[in-house]
Image (cartoon, rainbow, N blue to C red; front, side, top):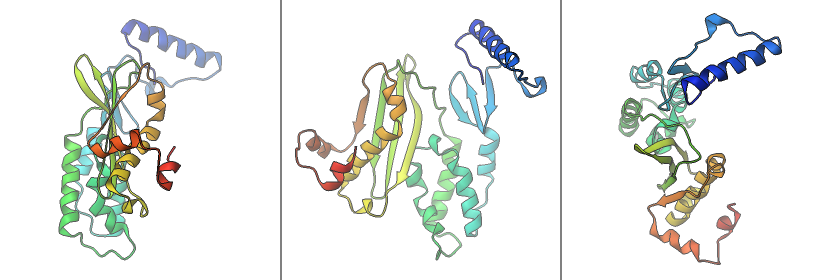
Length: 234
């Protein structure tokens, strides 16, 4: 995929790529190529100058999905939905009741709470935002949150047109982490998010802003005594 900031640049970039291919005896089949388009479908995504969005054909498949009636059907649905998890805020929290049915002893059909999450997740895909392209020169914000059983984070940037999401991510807490105090879970969420988006954050031309909703985290700014798991976190 070749992308450029202007049409003039694009002509030069495409010519350069094709010249390099020819110089190495590599050839692109014309019928398999698209040239000078404003958006393109790529590996289940639609990539454009605006950013990244879900392929609407795939979204329609999710909307038409019937409630899973057995383990195999649930695994199939979650596997399909997981592909687009970066578009859904607090995804792990939104599927917590569904994933509980992945356990070996689970009995179907889904209970009321799992069915509610199933339908809410399908609806979340219909309102998922376009994820903007990351720009190292723009002001950047990392927002983190923790619940009793999951961590969530949003990477955003501020441009002339306002604040835009770059990516969402989330994860379930491990069994040992479920026993952490809430301030430890919030701190773990920060550590996890910074490690997850490390490549983006290290490329920034200036510092970034970190937002969290737990005031007790201010304690860690001055504390010299850490618990064993806090000390382990890089």
